[in-house]
Image (cartoon, rainbow, N blue to C red; front, side, top):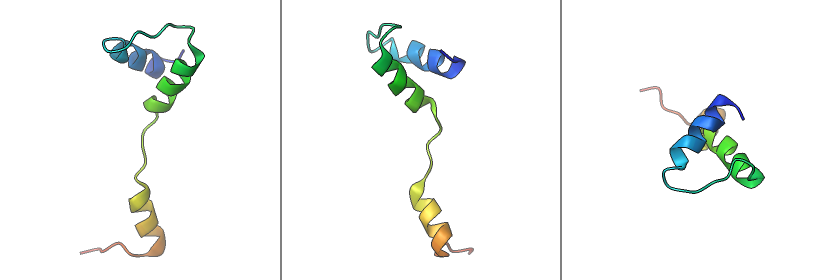
Length: 53
């Protein structure tokens, strides 16, 4: 388990009971630890619809 996943696991353990060998829980925690992208902003930039004002 990497540091981000371990930190997320510790934070969520206050609310949920997750075992360390629960593979699905680990996959979810890893996914949650990745930064999110704003797809709406990406679409506007690609189409040239973003205002510079």
